[in-house]
Structures are given as C-alpha cells and as structure tokens.
Image (cartoon, rainbow, N blue to C red; front, side, top):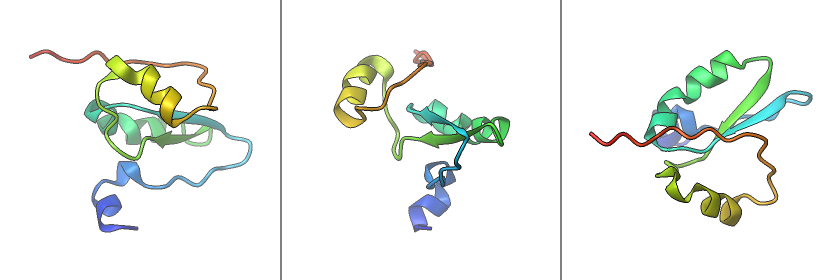
Length: 85
C-alpha cells in the first residue's frame, strides 16, 4: 500500500467479489468521510468503490462522469448539497 493510500485508506483498492453488486461513490470531502461507513453497512451485499481523489463539486458531475467513466451505467445518483457556511 502506498504511503498516501495508507494514510487515506478510503482511496485503497477494493478487490471485486463475484456475485456482489457494485456501488461507486463519486464525491467530495463529505463522501470521503462516509465511504467506510458505506462499506461496512453494505458488507456482504456490495463492493463499495470510490473515486481515487476528491471529486469536488457536484455542479459538474455529469460532465465529469461522461468524460471519465463512460460506458459505466449508473442506476442511481445521490448528491450531497454543498454547505454554504
């Protein structure tokens, strides 16, 4: 495990498990915080993957997805609103 990945374990590689659903988290720093909770909650139900970096604002999510990840076929997207504090 690289030094960066050891420090930010949310970004580590998750080995695919045959017959489990796949969940992909694309998000900002908020999603980095809940990645491990999602993995624990969905253990034995799904492999939970996340973007290898902070995805930034969801304002340009679709454009980024089309550029980076097609032909992935998302079945559901959940956006966490930006906090304007």
